[in-house]
Length: 194
Image 1 (cartoon, rainbow, N blue to C red):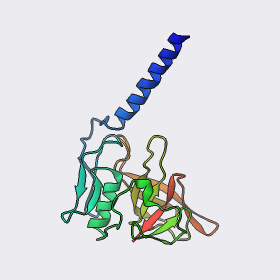
Image 2: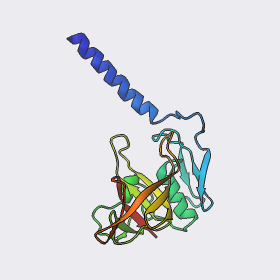
Image 3: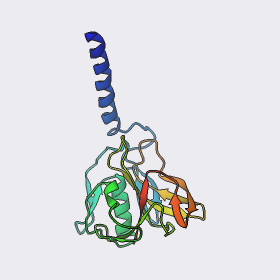
């Protein structure tokens, strides 16, 4: 019985160690960390390898914190800074923290100086909206992306750091239900708009 418990404990330990190592290393031989893989309006999207990889902090020329290099937060903050000339009053925080669950649909998120909409919302998502996702067991920090295209029944997002084999662009169904727009993804908390 002791031997069986030791074997199970050993397997669990190796599994946990493997999980944490895989989140930090590059498992995809087709890309190198820091390699440009996409762009939106001239703002580059970089490959990050494992979702937990960190390659230092990126600051603007004036010292504004854009985030940890090649993470999802760094891309959206860099995009808002370079393309939309927007600095967030609170320049720190994990991806899921961009959404303030205490606000009502359409209220101003003062930490980000952006209007916040819940999923679902009376306001239809728009190009350049910042989309906020909840955390998961595999990624407790959540995720953020930017809407790059909107049609009547679909949105396209662009993202940085979706994982070693994830794509920089994804599409989600967009529906109108009971007078509100819903992005069909259970992890999407809502969207922010300048």
